[in-house]
Length: 149
Image (cartoon, rainbow, N blue to C red):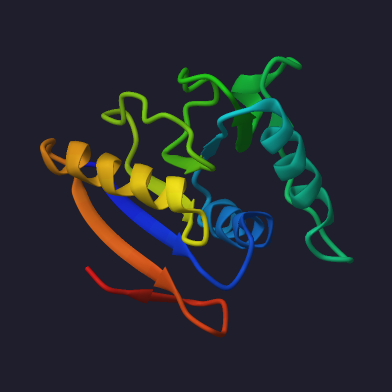
């Protein structure tokens, strides 16, 4: 059964939150697929992963540039799991693909954008009808996560 965690951003931006979540995927020796809705978001995530700390970076690649299967962390606009990822990160309104091949899904949405909140509620309802194990985490004032469900 796939575990799906909804991450409700409130105090930090998407580009601040993604690198720390991606670092946890990388540190756990899992493989991650980050799916964005559009190319601009994908490029912004790419830059954030290269520059999120002054002394390190998260090795990754944007899909379509080759060697996708070798990447521990792949950024994509497509549904295909080209790097055989265990963890799928859906960001900025990316459409939910078939999640049955993933152990975990991190659904990250901006709580300050009404359309993203509405979409997250609709996607929660859709996923609730599946066999997915759902949880909901809300960002606290310190930028950490409090599990609500």
